[in-house]
Length: 587
Image 1 (cartoon, rainbow, N blue to C red):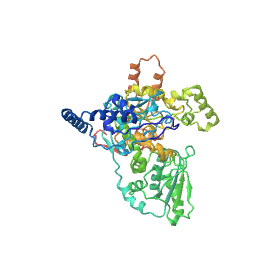
Image 2: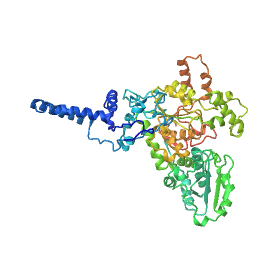
Image 3: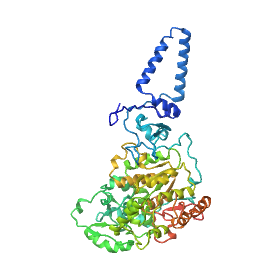
Image 4: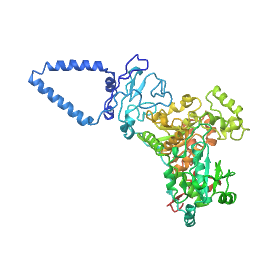
């Protein structure tokens, strides 16, 4: 058996099938864990010694035999003893890593000195790890029942009922809209010439975080189609903030990307040998350019040189494109850009763990230090943290994104600041989220760490992130890959029953479009500008406050919205009407 680091005490571990763990009471499990090997052996020895002295009496022997057969039958049919025991009975590390303080606590969100394990209080010196086969943990719903800590206590302590679906989990009326990418006859006719062209090759360098990269890749495909060029697999610029050196194929499934677009744009992994020595035409389009501008600007030189290299594509292409090109943008965003298999598999596993005990909400919390600095807002945790943000903003004024003449309070009341943990908590409660609601929070570690989340944790104790839910070692291959970590958050968020961002941004916009395309799954858009004045009114009774907040959000729950109802909307955020059709006669 493994020893603790200071070698002062020996730790005892047991391996028990999950079905048995779920069938016995907390007190029985406690007594089972309290038994040391030495004590058990001694007790067993005394029992059998006493027994053998009685075997000379036939009646007692017959009675005892029948008793044993009865016990064995009960175990056989009640507990199903054919389930194999774990091949790893002496695991020395917790199966789950904790996102807040993995070294000092196995998983309590509170600061209790004891650990909760499947509803049983265990002191740290007596802690035993119940181990199962990996495939049981990953694929069996018993995962949520047999492991308990801050991130994986997916069952209410003391009861095995699933969370009942209430009003909060009700989905919006999708009005019958479904994906509909019927390209025109002219588009299909032109595709043959685009795909056969071997003279023009478009190279692009995309920058920013994961969702900025996604947006630029979408536009790169559309620009390649406009120019009738083959697209060389996009080059991902190393992010200066996170230092992520991931390449396209590390994050996305390249073969899938190429195959899905096979009838729209030819995608190649590299330049052919005939073009390797060509000096490319370089460019960086201005904001919101049209297809005609792109052709007139680049096509002549492109035909002559054969290679065009574009940088800085963020928001360079107009949002108001011809219908076929809008459909192509949807096809890239919602179908072609699938995550690489290892990333997708891990994201799916974590989503399944969240889903194993009923519906869950995904929150995108924008509470990182750089977000407070860029937005010109204050976290409101303490004067010390506010001073950290103010100081960095003074030193680097270029980080502030717009409206520098506004005070912090003016910015917040205008809806330009991320919601704090307290704001999010009050909003969710007003919208009907129950205390036992399961919540997955996506995003980087907030400024202030765990304390910044305290109001949310206090009101909604079933709050988890990917570090809480991943098994030991699962995230290790991606530890220094910020874009892949963001991709895991994206997958779990997209699969949630309800999604809500605390602030606008590329991820929130991407998931809004993805959820709309999937049938308008519930997406709460916080109506910050109208609701925050009520947040400041301390005299408002709770029932009245809740009623007002619900009314303010009755049309902000992910219902279908026409992209064309407002100029400049992105089709990958509002896929109706270009990319979705409705069978309803009034659509």
